Length: 281
Image 1 (cartoon, one colour):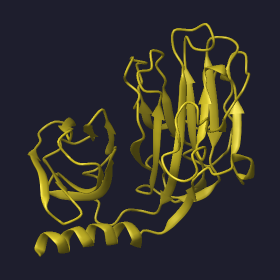
Image 2: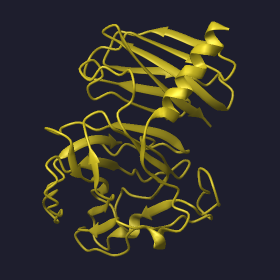
Image 3: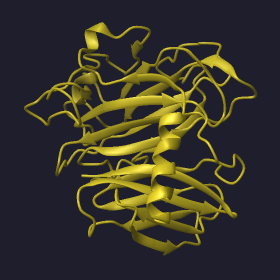
């Protein structure tokens, strides 16, 4: 009973957070307040509706996701942004989304999440990130084959770098060097089921500075500025299915043995805890 009560409290915490923005990308032609900027060396296509011949959406109609690919440039450097609607944000607010590339992709992809820390709104150019100077997340920074999730993987980004609550924007940046039609890198990525929520309850700012997590190839990847101490996973019945002591700032937890579904995770750093949900595909 105690475990079930704990699990219910975790999921109650998710629902109590004020939702600032939610987007399922059912029809990207109806997006309001978004700005797409293609500052690649030779800009070509940009973001488009998900292609069901490549893979289907994480949720909703099969094509209901945001997609882009190697054709974003006719040259060799892809630098493509989608800037999200301006919101009043503060440190600790949370962006979550799912992303994937093609299973078995031989052409590595990379995705960044950035924020404009002072809200000045200076647009990126071909050789500058504009006012989007604060890097919050980088998926596959070294463009490694297999380094980008090859199935829909849940990502979380904690807003940081703001001096005070600020009306500003987050941005996705699809940035791939040696890409394009003739390059060794860049294939196809999708983004789906995006949410921005206000500050998560019960999280210590200092302890969980730069905390991030994602799932890739049946591994739960955890990272933070401070050493992680412990992780627990609970199924929907409140039963503990994984408990593992940790000691480093980057940790990998094998979840291959878990059934497909939703789990509650509880991570400890410096005696403080953060609870969140993960989705095992």
